[in-house]
Image (cartoon, rainbow, N blue to C red; front, side, top):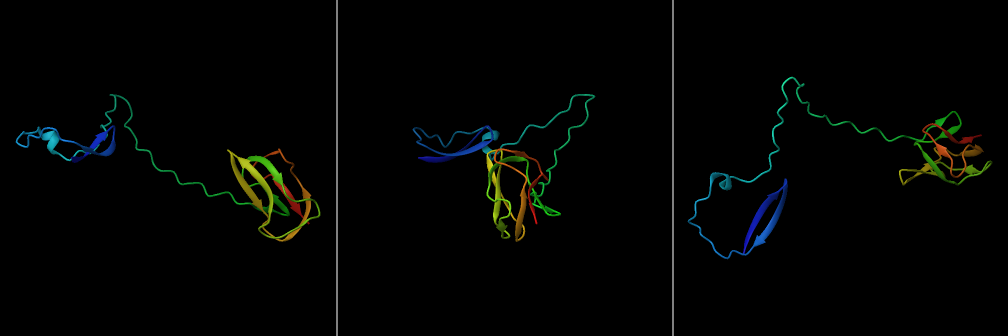
Length: 139
């Protein structure tokens, strides 16, 4: 058995093969003697077209934060309200989940940033919210 590494469409595979006949005296062409690595083809622009540009990596956007705008707790994402876990007049502690939002099949808990009492609830289950929409207001 011989262990070989093969390159198919730029993907490397390690394989074991059974050698039925081996002629070690055989001279292989130069391209078999080189270490086989994938090199993408060079881009040759058409005459008169602008030179190709290399894409640059974009910085990830910082994660949206839940903010208290005055006394309003606002939505950190665009999404749909799945649950509203508080009622008007209810006391909440910092870190307590007040609502659950869904965007792209991902759930996001919206937590109270401070201790306080809920003055009003601005959303209902099933409502669509956008970033900055008031979810609840504090007294």
